[in-house]
Amino acid sequence: MIDNNCNTSIGIVDSDMAKRGVGQPKKESTSVKSVRLPDRIWKMVSKESKKFRSVNQYILSLIEDKLIKEDNLDDSKRISPNSNSTKGE
Image 1: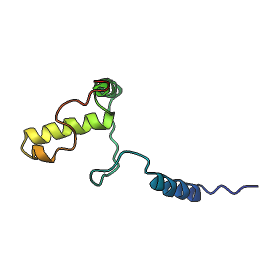
Image 2: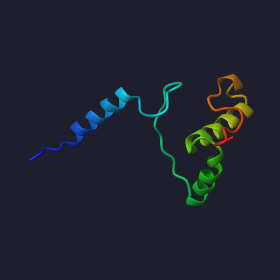
Image 3: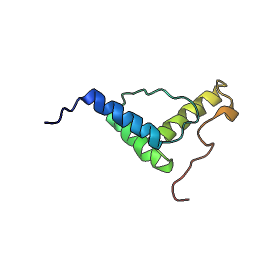
């Protein structure tokens, strides 16, 4: 019989993923957060994000645009590209 301790399994996967470099390269440290959105808003965000690399990239660009507009962020400090990173173009 195999003893499958979830905590041990997760630790093995985490270290394996770190070795392989799974995920996008980090440009700076990040925090994992969640947000609750109404389904109708999420569907619009998901549809609009098709023009970007990912939903996260789209949301990041919206936030950065707002912060830059209000002079809370310098445009040179932007992580997301200034224009849409459209797929296939």
